[in-house]
Length: 406
Length: 127
Image (cartoon, rainbow over all chains, first blue to last red; front, side):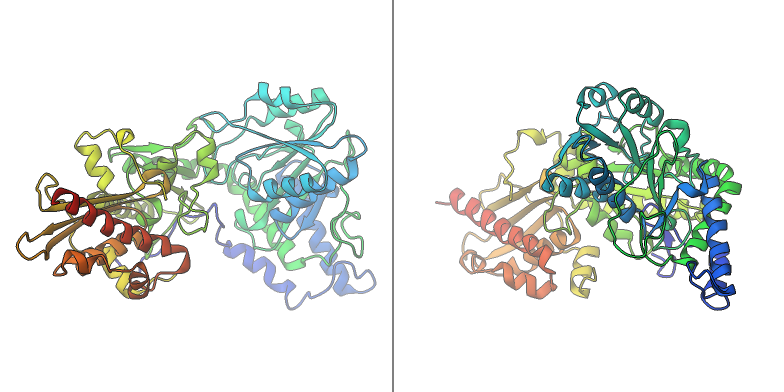
């Protein structure tokens, strides 16, 4: 295999920073080094002006007011702030939160912390398509429920939840609706106001902006939402998030938002075709399955299981050249496969056999064709080595074997 | 995670991949692990009836790179040993030879179990 070729198909982990974003950021390291909170000199003014512009651009991207944008260090912090902040702020009203089993760890672990703090959390199952069951959601709401937290699009599968329907249920019951929209913002149209989302977390580095900067959208009118700050300090960001603003990062995220406003629609169409090309190429192999609903998903993501092949081993056949992710967590101490795929109803064996491909702005036809070829060869190599592939080919019923669990 | 050259070599060019006829009396088969755990190893030995020496060994493994390399190495080590000598192969020797990282030690344990399983099967056929 070509030792120099490097193809990045792991854009759901992080996107490369767009060169236009880097160009926009650079002056804020050198010629405009000011603190946006310095109100008495031109350095501070320049920084504040740049932050305001970025704030308004990001607000425009998601159809909200600039005053509703709270800058943070990233989506993990935004998720923590939203969940713990709402729990602390609305504790007197109720102590119950509803979320999904397929949420990101930043949401799930914040919820676990809330449980330790005395709160109650319901973790809903998803159906085999990976989507929330709206009836179950509504049935889970009690008079103690203060918040529903459901992600816009899933990081592992790209599945998009029925946001409008969820929003309507929350509205009907007077419950706040929070969404981790990290994987959706800048890639597909996202407007929290249109679907009744009151708090929304996202980050710069999944939309071709820099790492280390994120946003929590907090609805300001009807209803006016507040969260209890999780960091004590100078009372920045309307008192909800103290800390000197990361001016270069914010400028970069603003530029990334500006590019997304102009290019997102065209890009989504291109990536969707490219993704289909990748899928068509890989699905030529037998016993290959796409995980999750193909009708409700992000344009640039596919999650595929190659039966009787272990995902991490498969990645090792091409990882000198191609970066992807696997749902098999053989590297982690737990050895548990992806909880997201298991929640979709995949058997542990298929979850161990999964690879996530996430395309991005800089992915090309050549990249995809190279990947199809390399992955197909890798699957062949691994199946030639696989005793369960051999058994399957011989017609042995794998269920009938008494496996020695370890 | 950076893997050792030896491990990568065993992964890319595994030794002794294949299947022996398990209906033969002098062939022992060890099948360990489970698909749900992400690891299945099948290791087979063919023993010379006269001398008790393992004259051939084959494997097939479903698993990560470390599992494949561990089983490939195990088959190399088995060949030429007597059945009783083979019982002494310790998983930590595999860990050392391949420089397995701590999270992958279970792969070497699985290989040791597969060796023991194959020998047990051979012995039970030849009591």
